[in-house]
Image (cartoon, rainbow, N blue to C red):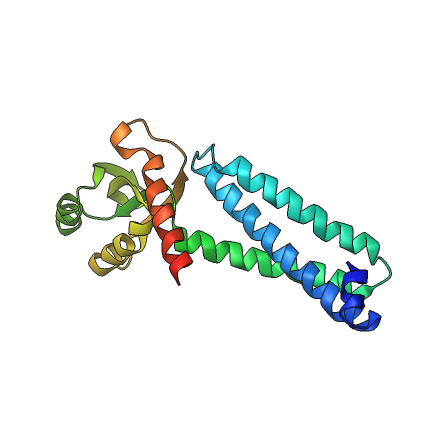
Length: 200
């Protein structure tokens, strides 16, 4: 690679201390971002996508680490490698937020039942269970529901608007038993999102 850039008239110092670190940084951002997406797809049971992402993740990592060994005496390469890892983590998290794949289990605990919240969920065809329970300070109402991640924020906003002190927990859901609620329904939405990004 160094010979190729030398043929373009690029000096050795410019290659070693700018171009190569930049390439290592970009490669590291790519493979760490893919790793985040791969884990996300694995958690959502998408067996066909995760291995493909794993292949490209390993390939890019090998290319990056290979350049590190070729420039083992260049401290800038190490900084670029570590910086790419940090940036790749951030980029992967942003991808995760934008795609919002999969479903989550939400538990909401309130001192009293919230009829307005129940109606809100019925209007949007949410599946839920609401039961009475015993808490540390007496009777409470416990509500369970499973929803798509892209609906989570609006649901939490609704809960807070009805009861600011409502206690809730959120957990990722890998699989659910009912076919009409299968997490694989999110696959078309992923394709739509990629299509939109490709047209931008």
